Structure formats: structure tokens, C-alpha cells
Length: 265
Picture 1 (cartoon, one colour):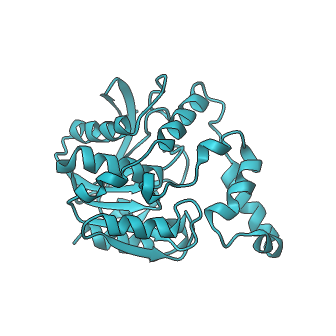
Picture 2 (cartoon, rainbow, N blue to C red):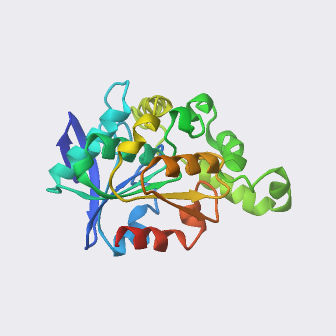
């Protein structure tokens, strides 16, 4: 099992593919055991792709909290160093986009080009949906609550008109085969706590590398208005819209080609 001993962690990672080095930073609750993962995406066919379970999650160590966004960013930088990468392309999705913001601000020399997907800057720029406030919701109850938040098109009328699709999506979202593992609940909560304090808004103007903001038109978690503010705040940032909600990368076939095009310029 590939692990890197960094920052007091046994950090689990996977690496595959050939091409320019690309670090992928996953979202809330990300666990590489959940299939399909990023290695089933077109990114793995274009890049030397590196992805990992963040502290408190998956097969990585789950130390006692609290955790900070700075720690998550420093973990990413330390993993790059462990792999012999001085710098790389970076894609951060949702919570991973928050980590990627801290990474490029704390370790600017390590990021060649940056994609921030379905994420938010926090602070006056706007935060993503406050998951820490609904941590008491579990399983199907949580999946049903978040369905119209994740994709605002999937409201009560859509659910009534598409009952089979609705139930299938609920079951997929509710499944968590690793929920009972020791330390899993505590690690997930520590991530949500760190996420609730995320705020890079006043520092975004310092991002100097080419940056793409990738956003879903119907995302109720990372709101469209927030994407526009973030793109305007980062010098030279490109804002790309896709047909989908928070999971637009799976919903819109144009998303991965557009991201790859940006990263390979």
C-alpha cells in the first residue's frame, strides 16, 4: 500500500499515467477506495496523475483534531516533495479546491497551472454550503436533503416526475461502506470543521499562476455568483460554465476536455 510519511501522517496515495505531473485534490469525504475515482477519468490518460486520501480520511492517518486548511495545503506540498516534484499542475475539486487555494498561496512555486472546480473562497467572497451544520443527517436522509442543493434542477417537481432516477441517485449518494471504520467519523468531522473556517478571499489577488474556475450552472453548493466573484478576484482567471450541478464533471461531457485543454496549453 503506497504511503508517504509526511507531517506526522501515513498518507495514502496512488499514482498512474504518463505525461505532465498533475496533483488532484479531492472533495469532502474523499476516499480512493470509492469507485469509480479520478483514475477512471480522462485525466489518467493524459497526465502523470497523483491523488491521495487527505488527513482523517480513507487509508490515511486520522490524528486527533482540530485540523486547519493550512495543514491540508502543507500535506499536499509535502506529498509533492515526497514524489520528487518541484512543481505540478493542480486540480482541486470542491473541498479540494479550497485546499488548492491554500496550496497556491502558501507554496506558489509548486503550482504551474490551477483548476478550481465547484469550490468557493469563503469570507466576503462567499462560502460553499455549510455541511458542518447538517452533519447530524446521515444516509438516505442526508442524500434526500442534499439532492436539490447539489443540483438545483432536481427540485420536488423533478423528483415527482422522475421517481426511478431520484431513488437511484439517493441510493448512490447514501452508500458509505466505510462509515463504521475506527476514526472515520471523527476524521470526517475534523475536515468539516476546517472547511467551515476556510477564507482565502483577501489573498486571492496574490495568485499568479494561470487559473481556471470550472463551475456548474445549477450548483447550489458552490453558488454561481460565488464563482463569478472568485474569477474576478484572481488575476487573469478564466471562468468556464458547464451543464450540471455540483457534480458537473460527471454530468457534462465537455468538462474534462475543457480542463485538459487548459492544463496542457
